[in-house]
Length: 223
Image 1 (spheres, one colour):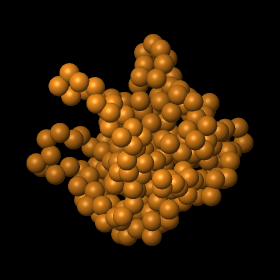
Image 2: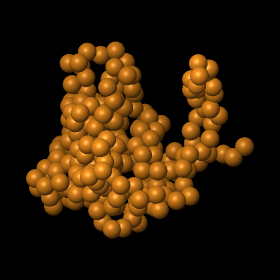
Image 3: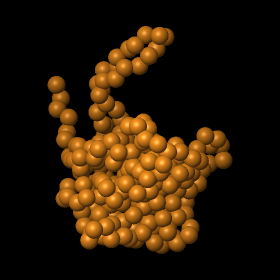
Image 4: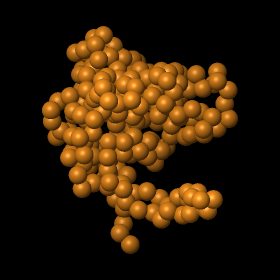
């Protein structure tokens, strides 16, 4: 049986690829997607005319700020959650331990009230397919229902794509930074009711305030 690389080594390899990406808007949009465990439509600001299914929710420059959280400088990103009709969530990462935090913040600051990534998801997807060529990530076995029969899909490797950045970041947050369900829901923009029982008021707290709870878990060197 082939041994899977550790999550840290997977993250290191993908980050190394992104650091070499060109042109600059492509590199920074990948950083943006990865750091906020986002969907590509939460980063890009445009869509092609024939795209009838996607709404772009990309940030403007002022959606990145610097904040002091218990004595630690943090880049705080306002993200418009695509699967929840653009409802805002907050993602915070420490500049002391996250090497992409300050460069991404400085990139945002060039744009003020204008879109940071005036790109389409298709433009990013084509370039990401080339950049990640040959890379895969493991999928554990799971079950699906087909024709009223429960079938098991065996564990397998899946080609690394643009959306895999979200999967990789979420996995890293759990396995390296020890995020709990509530932390992950806040960071990734999932409804808290999908991971625990919560009222709509509690969910709004998770969206806008829970970064203060999970932030200390990110205060560790990983690279």
